[in-house]
Length: 138
Image (tube, rainbow, N blue to C red; front, side, top):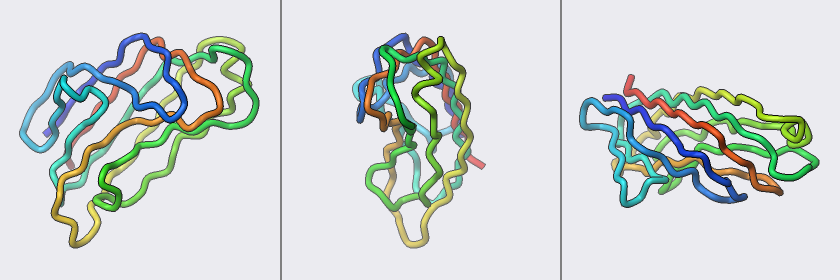
């Protein structure tokens, strides 16, 4: 199974989930529904690779480090993944391209599906100019 998603130009607020549009899909183990465009549904017990590319810029000057989290609900269906950390002051100098790849491995004994989303953990919003996410079952 595989799924390709694209994002629209949007102001991404802190603690917000990035909405997506489906570009292409094959198989049945990865689903996206336009009624909840921030969530990607994954079948339990499978391993997935998630890759995303974002073109972002700061809306206003900010200090410190922000993170982009690959959030799952409920927690614990897949092993936790490392967030993408980004120095916020670098984004004030113009658009930056961010890329990240994660492997989602199922946790033993968890038989429920999970909703996956991309969450901004930062003190200030970002302007997303372009976004692409690819998910494939391994």
